[in-house]
Amino acid sequence: MSDKVLVIDDEPRVQQLVRTVLEAVGYEVVASISGDAGVEAVALEQPHLVLLDIRLPGGPDGYEVCERIREFSDVGIIMLTAKARHEDILRGFDAGADDYLTKPFNAKELVARVRAVLKRTRRPEERGEAVQQCGEWEINFARHTASVRGRPVKLTPTEYALLRQLATNMNCVMTHQDLLTKIWGPEYRDDVDYLRAYIRYLRRKLEEDPSDPKHILTAQGVGYMLSCPDQT
Image (cartoon, rainbow, N blue to C red; front, side, top):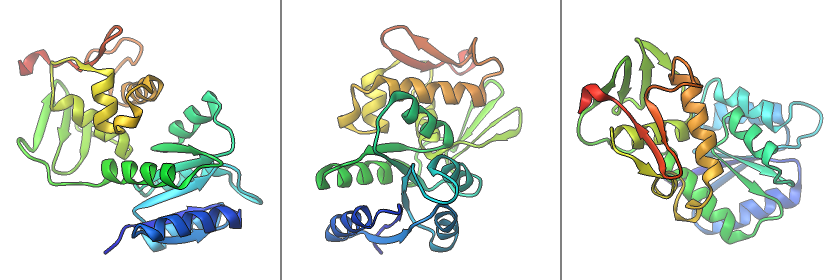
């Protein structure tokens, strides 16, 4: 079965472009023109990926829609925006998005972004140890979950992918470029702001004091490390 992509956008031209391009390379495409209908479509259609416009008429905007989707689904979400201001991008990540695409976009960029997000949000079988401990943290590779002192922590697919990459290289510094390439793909290897944003999100959710992290440590100018001395 082909992967299903839901487009939430009120512009017929955008919907038609996405449908034409993605169906040509084998994806199934469904569409909604409003935020409320889009949230309902995620629940009913169970798409593998959502393309979500930030500006939606007559109801919740894309940020609110993204937050509502994240209440019940970890589907991959790419925000569509006519502007690529840094604060807009970070606001989208804060809402739970996995990537963004600036309008107007071309066919090659659309396909590349869709494939990259689908690749990192898909859940392949994990190898090696099923559970990794790091102090009071527990990362369950089989279930794709994390907990702190037994309390489940809700992570987006990208947040989990980053934590997993750090956990499987525990006590080793991973460079910015290596993490960006493994999580987002080689075309993102220089987008260090992406990485900094997601490290910040993980610290907020996992560290007791995000401003003074004990486990997710910065190697200044080099990269990041999940430090767990008891696992050396």
